[in-house]
Length: 56
Image (cartoon, rainbow, N blue to C red; front, top):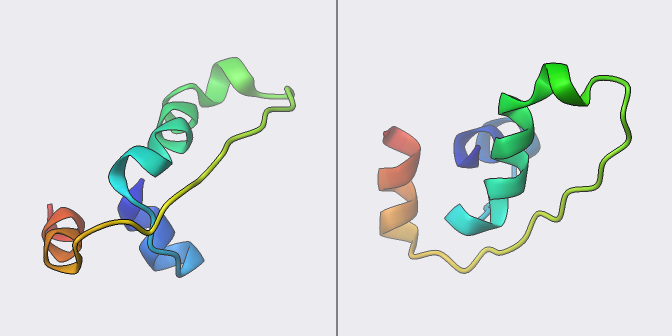
């Protein structure tokens, strides 16, 4: 999910800040046609660790 936000949305999101989004990606079929809200938060991440996360 962090890589998606970095590449597609041009956003820095901390690991726990994108968990809700990551969960919805795994539930696409169950959520189809439903309205949901997801809170995306943070930019509180060590930049050297961030690069490490994105390369994983």
